[in-house]
Length: 202
DNA sequence: ATTCGGATTCTCT
DNA sequence: GAGAATCCGAATA
Image (cartoon, rainbow, N blue to C red; front, side, top):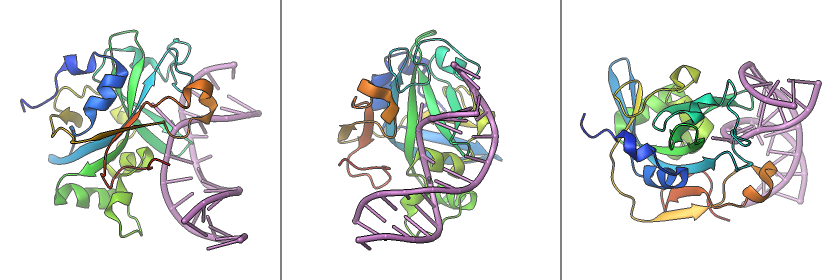
């Protein structure tokens, strides 16, 4: 499709990319089927200065090297030994910015059913399927095999244009208490009044 | 309604 | 060998 977001979108400051990704469409292709999700919540991680980022200090490691690559690819990692988290790499080569996708919203019935199949839950609330980084990865079958995928091209995982959100809320990031002065940075963005946002402002 | 701890494995020191 | 960008169920009040 021509509606894929082009490379230049990602080659900018991580904060701008995080904010502008809201409302965009995350597409997951599995077994020839296409599932679509709206991105409703993101966080920016701006290495090398950000103490909350994996890239703090600015030296690539075996795990973090995708972040040092050119923007527009995925960075997927395992957290707490149990859950994967999906990030989109931003900015130019050797500028380690990335954007954590914290929550998405299924855009049609088929996508919703797909989530339920991958992630059975007791809750009746549909938003419990994808309102958190670990949850959405499970619901979309995202694991380390989708690491370093180019999201500007059609494939198993990519991003297309979507609707521009009416109102965006800026907030502090979640669960990075160790990041000292950086933990209070308002580098988290979400779409106001969207029920799929993981944690609301206190 | 809110707090608490266990699960589980990869990565870096 | 510690600890992590999380989630969920159980216990408490």
